[in-house]
Length: 452
Image 1 (cartoon, rainbow, N blue to C red):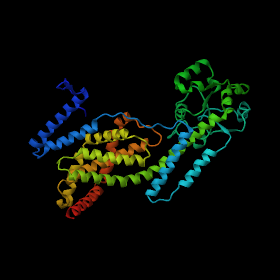
Image 2 (cartoon, helix red, strand yellow):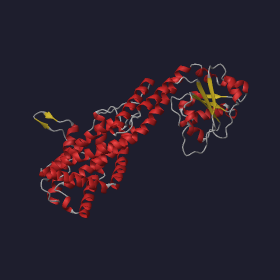
Image 3 (cartoon, one colour):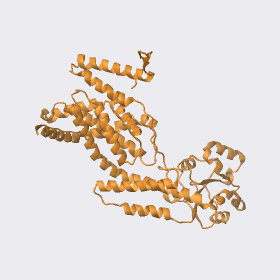
Image 4 (cartoon, rainbow, N blue to C red):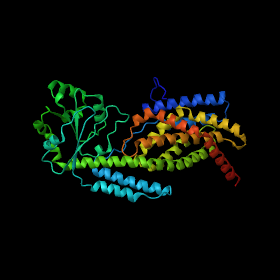
């Protein structure tokens, strides 16, 4: 938590002055150093406390310094989505090779090629919720006459009470949707409309009972602005349906832009499916990386003469780890974005007392298992390793939420960081016994190295 700073004047030495943002940092660092030195020397009676607080203060400064970030954006064109899917195919190949799994690249490449080479006719779907009457199939065909090679599909009524408001896959593949909307509009109709992408061609056909001017104006006030140009009032007469559906007919007669939107949407769905399949492989690969990183950090902290947890070593170790994680999750984030994310998660972990809790827990388990295996400085090193473990797990969850198609929102990360860290800490706490077993092996290995 950033401490408030009152009436601090710019430092001036021989005509040289520090910017205001540096005076605040220096004041905060001086306060942390003074209070920490007094706490460790006079209260805990720990020698070298000042150096420990100095290292901790440097680590806290590194965790809190602001950075300018620039993140990747979701592809906006068909070419961009094709390139992204090809990158995912390479990611599959690399992970399956690293995990010694059967390479499925050929079958996935074939699925991508079939989607791009598809030459199906234009398709239009007519849907409604349960209880809403649809125009007859014959009248719809007559109203849309003149569109070449049109595949007209009449969908099953959508439920008005559902546990998942997800459109059926066969309707998601259609080029254009005509949603028959009753008035007054029901909440279920609005929920179904909210699930449709913004770029999806959708028209709203208003039923005969809802064609009065007052009811249409009331509907416009209820609907988001994106739907205001999609309303098609209809008086219910068969001979006027063709006139009401004129905008739909004109759109279907110009198939190229509509088909491009459909292919782009299907590529996005395919990419989402592949991302879900990749996640299992990524988690498996990540656990190997995490074990390596946590013991590297532990080794650096154990070798440090400073008797406090070396936050700089943890920060640097985590920074190197997240660079590898960005490769595993195919996140095209620059170094500044990665640093901002790991600092935010690391700061949240420190604020929640992960280091203090892990040190106490490790000491408790050491007493149960016997203290002979606990070398000097091991608790400090293992606490740093455990902090790396928690930050890495929370970082994996964040990358899984943002990899591939979503732009990382750092403001949203600030809000979610405490929850991500708490969830990761709880998950790792359940496997604390396994962590202690790994720690024992690491300490024995260090002992063998020293003897050699």
